[in-house]
Image (tube, rainbow, N blue to C red; front, side, top):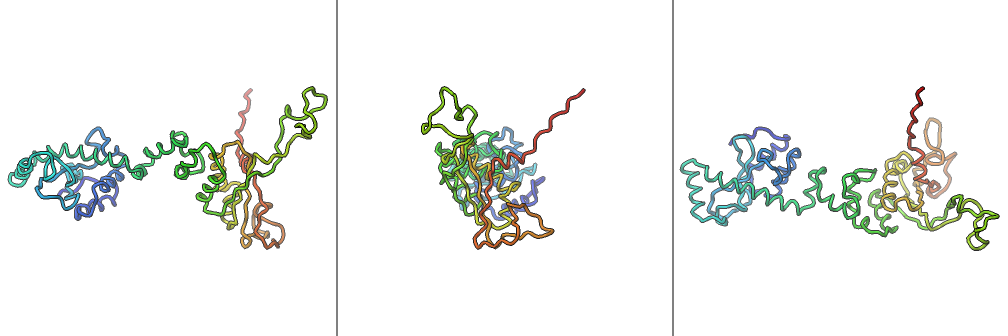
Length: 355
């Protein structure tokens, strides 16, 4: 048996050798899937326009017996391309559509006259039908799409249910696309409840999470909405008049409570940490910019650090003056995430005017 001209990877060559030695231990679909995954630079099997873009050939041996296994042998063409001899379908054989004497003729020409012309001619159709048969199977298997992340048709279909089907909406923030697709059922709903956000946060961060609704806060009023004296359409006392430039509101703000956390994980939720940016992207994906929200972090009592010389820390966030004498966990840090991360963004430099 001739050796193939080259392998995409050394592991692929070892796998082909194992396939050639014990083909009966391999499944037809999984074998073609492995070959397709080993050639990401080529079109998917069944979609290539030219045979030169296909890394495998599919054939059928001229046998009269019933198949004991899906695969019978692995051969190589003169160009070093693997030829997979399978027994699950074809034009000849005990289950083929052609008459039995065609199988006998093909077998006789190959064994007694060393003439494989008829068999290779029939393999031309078997090869095409086999790849189309595999492509029909692969399109019905969502997990096969993950073999090529750049050509994941199932992810696009699933993301379209939640408004994430276009390429411009993929990989756009700190949250992975797989996490969003996992919660497509919840993201596809027009009503976004607190239970859905809670389930997403618990799944993403693997920590204790709570969502506190109806948190009171001062809502600033626009200048044209404030109560003014000597104004003809001013509102009356007890009918909507508000003193000052802000009003107390409990309908448009919620709070996410995470903890108790270990110190290393606690730092990940501080400004500049990876988990804080991910949490912001998740909340924006869930509720947009309609609601106000903040984050309350709880640091486990044994992990509360003591402030000392030569040790860095952010006062009010990850450092406390003196000894921490409370028996409970440190739960006094509340972060306005949107305002904090917006202030940390670098501002673009204005071009200097030329004279």
